[in-house]
Figure 1 (cartoon, rainbow, N blue to C red):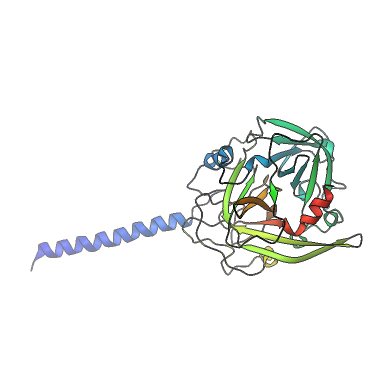
Figure 2: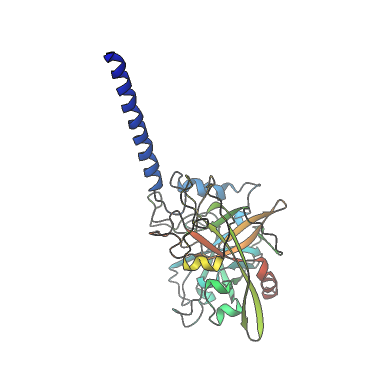
Length: 333
């Protein structure tokens, strides 16, 4: 009997199973990797650099501002949110930043809102006061959930901002599903080790794929009917095992978004939205021009089983701008 040959064969078998076991452990570890807001294999600074560099082939991130505000008009401005300069005097954001009927008797006062311009709200380029806050009419009357697609607000500045080019809005139905989109804001990343929890998070941008476009939603106030629509994206993990808008699990909030498909491939700067990004823009490219297609309203609750907010599987929901374009333009006049 050739013992040397048997020994070589046994070593080969042992090596084969050892390698398979190592591969399985790597995959298992990757599948169980959690994160917050951005890919686990990238640093927050890389996402911040996208807005700081503001490349010409990407959206106009300079137009994205931070709100620091109180709800009672006082100087105790403990809340933050995001918004987009769409005119020298006007900022588009989400209504829920300043008024939630269940917890407030009235909307936040303009006197308690400060607008910060620049990438670092801890050292802003400039600060502006607010003259007026205009909430979508049906949000103001209490129709305050995703299904109404009316979570919109216009903020008028006391002094025009003339040093920044306002962002453009999508005015017609030109949002193509499966398009690459960029989302920008000042979300709170204090849960991450690479963020100082004593400071406000810097402006950052994440990319994603537009997975849902929901039309045909309406609300009414004072005898006027308003049309509304939604857009949605999901946060895929790099190995393609988590794809919440493409799986068979349908949460209650997902039902509002209807059926559809979702690509499992995570982009290089794939990400989701977190607290503080509310009111920030979703940009889409129309014929070479980046325009605001959506305003961040919030995220779906429990998009996948055992989900943690900000982790892979997150679903972000935006109010579609093109459907409410006429109201936006009219309200600014």
